[in-house]
Length: 335
Image (tube, one colour):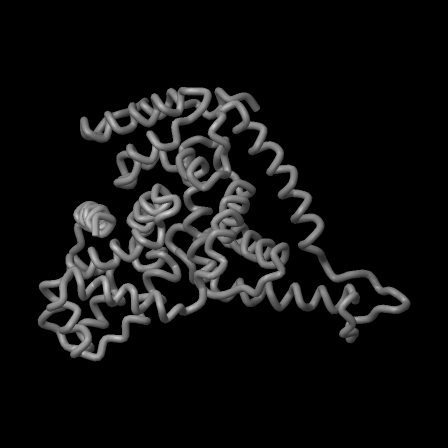
């Protein structure tokens, strides 16, 4: 596969219905991607507002670059894809197996750690645990059986290779990455292996994300009090448990509570943060609260919880939320 298969030029084709501003964004990103060595800082500056439905054709390549899956040197992209396709096929063959054959010193009731039968049943338990979540994950977008199988495999293999247990929330991360890959307009980028390796990279940086960290809950609450003490005090008076927001918003990084296009756009912004992802998450969460302030400030505990647990149903201008979060982040750095 040659680099022209990425077809950078096609990104600026078919501009029907696309605003002049978004056309310019596509052209500017395209200009950066034409260079043999991609200017990562320049790419981040262009993409930090996230991609809308008019510009989401850029997401596939940009995510691979910002996650570090693609090197900045463009000439290696094809090599990365081909190599990882082969590696992933081998990983599937080695780790997703049918029941083992009968052996003299091994049997289905064995509990020895080196027993093929014991390992097989442990694999089955892990697969079934993951499957229970997969069948209800992003059903509208990934409900086809082939996508469910891909998602199950990605999660299963990630857990098995890293010798880690599966926890809820990982399915939401993997779902967004798989959807990003499989919905790419470039057929060469529509592959399960890319989704698997991008997910593995993400999980490496988020391995502690699925633990409730009370000090971070307190830090978020302190920041809210600093930014909007009236809203903070009202939520406290209504016995709002801020750890609920931590689980829903920070642990799974808004991957669940929105239409998938909005979750993907939020992740565009998060990936542009590189080393400031957690800081931006705090600012983004506060920006959401401010966006909903009018209803939250007069609500009781029940109505507040209903609002915050159903963000997809709220009247939210995501562009405003993102811009306010970035402004808040800049203000905090000055302090």
